[in-house]
Length: 144
Picture (cartoon, rainbow, N blue to C red):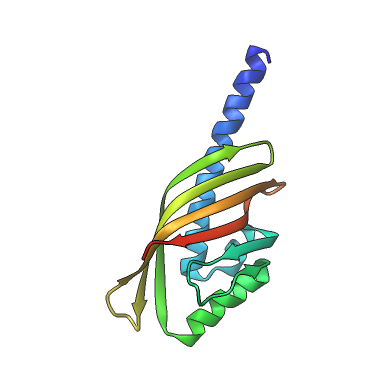
């Protein structure tokens, strides 16, 4: 690889890493605001989501994820805040990446002060699409 090609690859890797980090922020914002359009933009059509709650089943596809979000918020009057930090890209290839990020989830019922709901880590597989990087598989590993 010549120097110019090496520099181009370094720039592409840096851009990919920034785009992946922003994807984590977009997902948290979409989830907290129940923004179904923004949420859909974060996922591949056939995304597999494996929640950290053993009572919640794994879901496949954007619509299944959106339906679960809407159902949860309708069943209980609450507000969530997801704080996702420290994204680490473990592997980065042309069209596929593996990444992890720490997550803290707070919930507030009926306007009460927020309480800690969960701490854990997302372990993700991402794919590059024409629109950018998207989650293809999300596993939430719950600590508490």
